[in-house]
Length: 121
Length: 107
Image (cartoon, rainbow over all chains, first blue to last red):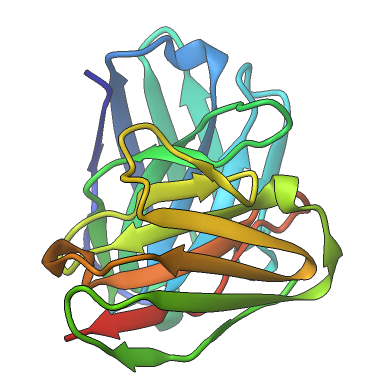
């Protein structure tokens, strides 16, 4: 069974840092692109970043470029999101999601349950 | 950036009704790169449709997707009580990947 379990969320002061983790199991992690998606309280979904199977390519939404870093450890079946210079507007539930290749399509077929980050003084 | 605009924002319907949700893209795109997700309260999103019209594994055939270029739709042929949720479209053809703002289907 495919499982994605996020951890590392919590309360952080503005300007602070935090690292989120996502533990993957039930599939060959090193063969999938992975993404982070966030959802502010009561709001819609926002894609944050993704990373290629071997970690060689990474992409970010403009609002987090230069502040967030996505990475992975294929030996540990884990995905990470290092977040620096946190702002109140980064407050959200952060989901990790698996990107599945279906022909030319690459939608998100499995999602974790999310971890809540609150940025507040 | 491809902006996706979903309409309407909220729909109030009854079980058994047919519903069509709209997703309009700010620029022409291939339906290959369009997906739909369902999110129930307190849950993670669930993939319903990918490639514009292909149902994901385990998704009932009352869900269907269609569209091309800038206009895409998700149709639920007969609403089941478990279908009352928020629905999002997503494009994954161009970075940044983007989601629509969502449509809430409520009783």
